[in-house]
Image 1 (tube, rainbow, N blue to C red):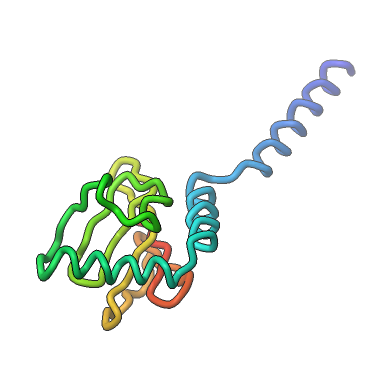
Image 2 (image 1 turned 30 degrees about the horizontal axis):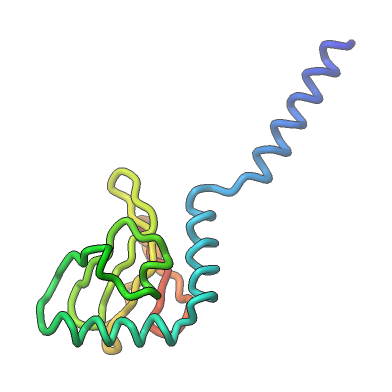
Length: 132
């Protein structure tokens, strides 16, 4: 009787622990959303425009982390890439081939539809949570 009671308590504790834990994806989503609210979308888009002016017409480019605008750096990125003028991907987490972060879409960019492999969640005008 005492053993089955202890097993029941252990199972209940494990269930409560598992239900209260965030998945890695949920944690990253929450962190990106909270950081975006603190920085403001307008500041990020303004800094993206300033970065465009500084980088000129170059296409895809990895941007050194020590040269990022403050509004990009606050995300603590592991990588920032410029796809083309106006379009940036701030990678906030990377594991194996998967990347998650904030996608800054160019003003005329067509936003792809989410699939089972890649998701896009609109956070603000031109700003998306991107996970693949």
